[in-house]
Image (cartoon, rainbow, N blue to C red; front, side, top):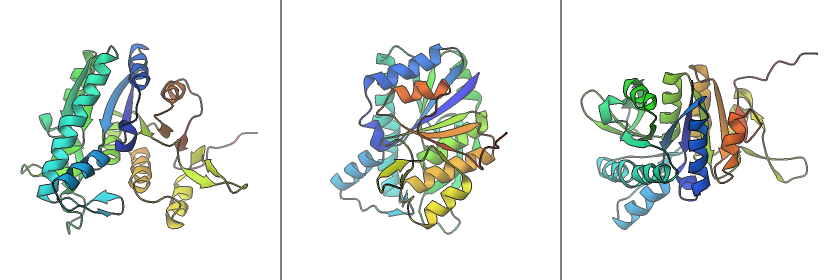
Length: 268
């Protein structure tokens, strides 16, 4: 069984069509893949924070999180967004179960940095896979919101890309970042934007330094690379608004941007 951890970004989530969810059910019913969904919800969090007049800002693509912000993050991610995805999968003919990283100790967290520059933003130090395996064996698709806690019970806001990579690592699975763009965009020879078919560790480091990769794409590619170093079989960034791309990926067709640690060896 191949685990396919699908990270749905907040921007893409609001635009996904019913066919996207139906294709996830097709992937499950193929018998070769077990999908697990990890989702974000950044735009919806920002909207609610604005309505509540709670200040928020980002540092290197991560939302600085106070306890007040954290309450809203948990409300949106573990509440409205999580349950909407569960409903969509159910309407598509599947069985889904929603949970957060807090449930059953699924995701154990620690501060993202010791100086707490990002507030209660966390990193994953352990993934408890037992519940995931129990649900998947019974035909369910787990839908996970990236809120976690440490052993003292302190909650943390986890970047969804980071959480997805940690789960894919623990399950030795494939990692698919679903975005509202078709991968990493660069300027081609013609001067027009092109999608990189493959991006290596060295290329990504250079593109970050040149500020071609910026904002929320930075933690995404960093999570992809970290996952590949720690047991993730393959990683790709693709466009969820082109719902067939998920099916193309599991069938081995080149889609989006494939992230690798180094160039593939060539044989003459």
